[in-house]
Image 1: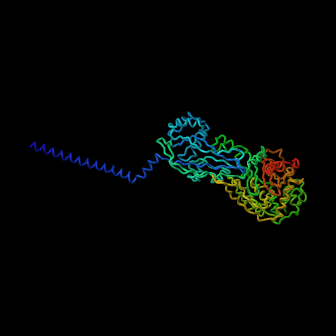
Image 2 (image 1 turned 180 degrees about the vertical axis):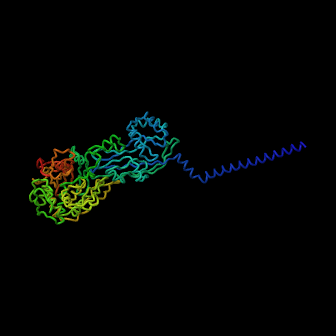
Image 3 (image 1 turned 90 degrees about the vertical axis):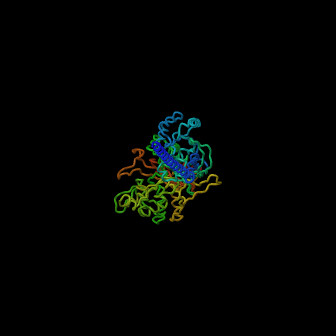
Length: 624
């Protein structure tokens, strides 16, 4: 009985062990099946995916930035260059303790407060996983010192790149602009693939306008790296396409001469070749050194420029909008001739003031005693306001606006310098839309002498003067003459827009130009002090009011602060019979155009044409 019971227990135990073995075997087979399925998925289904991931752990694709095109003046002088530079960059996402890392770096490489301040500023502007420069322009010794300890600084690298430089500094700041680091707003509007590997973009002037030509196309290279991310070798890649070089009409020697001619005055000078529309000089003064902006100017230095009362960052040549004063009178005179409102012999009597029919308000001439009976030539030579009051009234504001617009006033000229403003030729429609007011006849008179709401840039004055020199042939001003692809045998000329003013005949153009030569050559001319023995000058002086005088007020410069004094203007072209240069000058708060602005223009024309001899002592010139 006990034996049978013992055997039964043994059988049950064997059955239990067998069942457990079967379950274990099933579980092992199931687990092995899962492993096999997973291996099959990894090796077959996901083979390509994990192969790529494995390859990326060993091979990295690095962008290769293009070299930016150089900029040359008309004689081949380099105006914008590139120089090699090493910077210490930190990829913030790869650094665990940013503050501690910077402090540790400062122990082996000089890192001052300006470096830290610039780093904080640029860190806020960067794109994610983009390196932020901590130190710029590392010396070879500093590069070597960091390399010895680089294993201690994951996420920190030395980056070699070409940095823009401007050898002529302040001379070219406003015309060339500068390049600077790409900010978030710019990143939203550019092709990021084209800018892979580069941090810089044109910020103003020619650099910004011709960014598409100068920048080039980024390339790439596949490199093999070790576990620490250090490059072992280059496997393959695509070379970047360098930006095109620009050859300008600008002449750096003339640019310097124009800058020196302005002296310590605030103002602008624009010189154009009437035959091509090429900008020979474009000066705004005071200026600034663009080089610190390339790698990031400090806040204190930037604020000093930004809040300076002299506004050195402001490009007066293309953005300064001033009443053109009497420099507009040749264009108003031509409008009168072309419209048939007047002719060369018709005279107007100037008693020193003008009253509209049926009104008692007097519009004064600059000469209190008047000019007597004057025709067009005498009115231009002596800058008689009353003559042009009458002419503007007879033309009417709409016709006057149309003729002035034909010369380019009231619209952008199309120059290839970023930031140009359009000026303003006021009209009845403009006043109703902008000021919600009616237009009064007296406002037409004020436009006729270049005052009131009438605004023009120095560039517009130069372009209009060049158009007059060309007898109605308008050429859009251009700074860049040609672009050259690296390695190409010659540069390709850039297109120029042109049109012709469909008004006036040859005699009428001649009459205006002859009158402008008499402004300089006549003993009664308002610019008689700059007459030359070497070439003939056709010009017109102007004085623009900074504030409006009351009815019984008299202008007295000696009693005014400098910033309240009149602006001095002058426009001219030379030689009068074969124009090769047209110039516009404004000297802010300079006073009379004939005594202040005209001599500046004369120096610029002498530098270009080779003149040197004055016929008369400038002395005191009567008029504006």
